[in-house]
Amino acid sequence: MLANRKVGWVLGGFSIASSWIWAPALFVSVQTAYQMGLAGIFWFTLPNILALLIFALFAPRIRALLPEGYTFPQYIRHRLDSNRVHKVFLFPYFFYQLMAVVVQLFAGGSLLALLTGIPLTTVMPILACIVLIYTLISGFQASVVTDFIQLSLIYVIGLIVLPLTWHIAGGFHAISAGFTGTENIKSMFDPGVAFSFGIVTAIGLIAG
Image 1: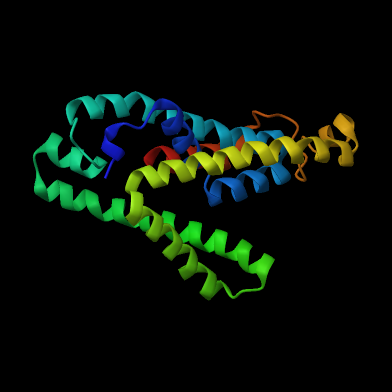
Image 2: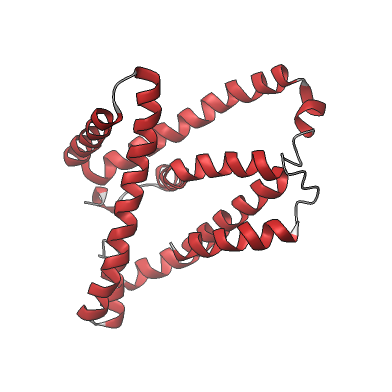
């Protein structure tokens, strides 16, 4: 189930980074950057970094306390020694996982449906079956390798697309004109953005 617990830090790090760059992160980051400029992307990125820092601090501690564990709910049951609390904790945990899977299938399926013309109701089950098949074959290792390939593609495509965008847009002057976004927010630390978007995002990400 856990690739014999021998996932190295390179593959593991790539896997965590790739998993963190899911559909809502891609769409929301672009939207906030477009609307609120640097302030929007800053207040979207900061809570994500904080959430990962918390993960980095607590994960080794949890692993030390439950070295043969598989899931965070299992750790909760072990730590609190309560099946009742464990069952209560499982409800939001399962809901969060279900939401994550559905939103990924919907976003990826929508993009493929747009590119291929195949109906979304057909694409989503196909995507789900593909992931299920390679996961059944190699388990967690398949997931980690897939994440590694995905993040590598993001880097490679980014190295191609970003310079092209810079050139086509007209260089730094043209791009910097969008730093304030469509809402013309001049300060990256604008309190309106912080309180209406940043703190709300932070609460959701850190709680998740």
